[in-house]
Image (cartoon, rainbow, N blue to C red; front, top):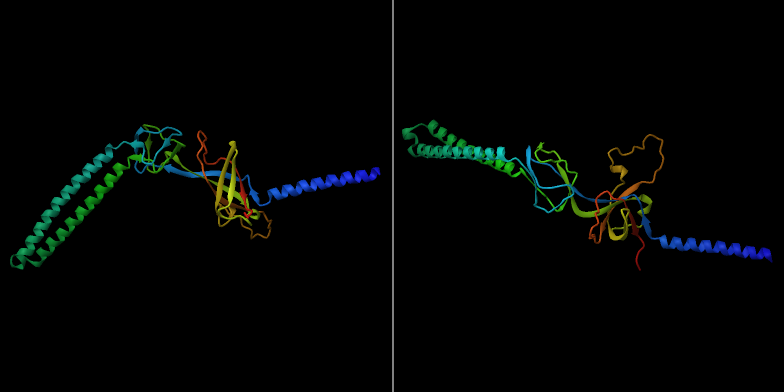
Length: 284
């Protein structure tokens, strides 16, 4: 009798454990999660197109800016002088061109009666050369005006200034990164195991948890799945032609977009760790 009671207790315990496992398995089926995921954003390096001294710096670290805002200004005086010189060169070229045109018309009017074919050809050549000189002077003026305009660094889109190395009064060279603007758009890049992609499709619902804000629950959608593993597109993709092959489960980047991302006082910067859960089960 005692033995039967023990057997019933053991059987009941095993049944309960099996039930818990079954319920847990069912609850987790149709979901795929990973902790290999980060928050991403557009990062735009701001580099000057002309060199010179920074005379005015209008931004500070982590400042929000709007598209079209003036961020910094490089000393424009040298470039203003180049514009004035280009204008003077253009004016001189236009005067020379007018004289060449008048002279060519005169030679054509009098014809060979008072001159030679060579003189006519020379006049026409001089006219064409003078017109080309005017076009060249106009191009040089456009370049000078563009360089002058490029002394002002303008925000290409809304965002936040970060990684600032520029200082007012410092000399900067063309192409040197002064700071970065982090755009407002955010998305998640989650590196799922290849075995987790079987039922994953674009448009599926995603629950997103961010380590920095554990109480913040966000929703998103699977945007797209990369056509290839992360290792395949790395700087040094693995080579398995040596004969010593060990199969490793590969990771595939999946882009996840947010349904809504407006939270007062919360800074969601790129690089933050994210835990996404994709609901791959088909809704009935």
